[in-house]
Length: 334
Image (cartoon, rainbow, N blue to C red; front, side, top):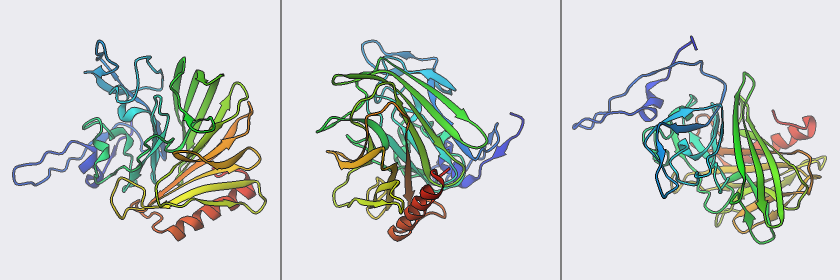
């Protein structure tokens, strides 16, 4: 593009490779980006020019290149080193998320301390460098065996079936003036005796910290679910809107990778006539009714290190209540 922007040195201390001299003085670098700073941004970045290592599921050599659409290679799995930060990402000035585009299919949070674009630089100075604290922020959520925050799978009664058996997965990125989205088409997703196609469309908007998620299965089956990862000693909060049409599940407390006193709030908003909240082994779950109709829910998080962000549990609860009221009045958040 013709327009160019300059990112400040504060964010770029982490966003670009800085050189540390023997006297420990850090050289701050300013770089130019050949695109207009957008209000929202989504991307997926894969390696080109390398090769799949024989006898393994690892991609070696090559360089990361952003693509607008792709089909996930059969060889790809977790820690294949093929997709930068392991899947697609969504971002606005307040927050950023990523989805593990492999059998795990969990959604993770990148906590941001700055209000500039960070995703194009995450994982470029070392594949998993984003786990370390940096001036821009860091990966803050440990998903483990869960679906992270707002990931999706099938609840089978005692466990969540992730995406271990899928015939084909296709991804498409869209960035517009009003929002950014990632569309993922799963063909032939098999869980137990059910095989279905599933379309997932996840949007981010210019303001606030939420994602809008839409899931559309090709066949009706029980157990399609989303949820929030469970942590010991972090209680579940639940609330229903005044009309009874919307509800949320939420958690707040010390549940991040960013420090002993670091606080994070997470929530899922859902329609009460389409789903119900239950407990799973690793997640607080929202399980959808069997249907081939589009299932819509909202994923929301608030990190206390975010610039001008939500700093307390009480402020987080007030924010959740305001969103419930908006859903009651407008049927949507965006």
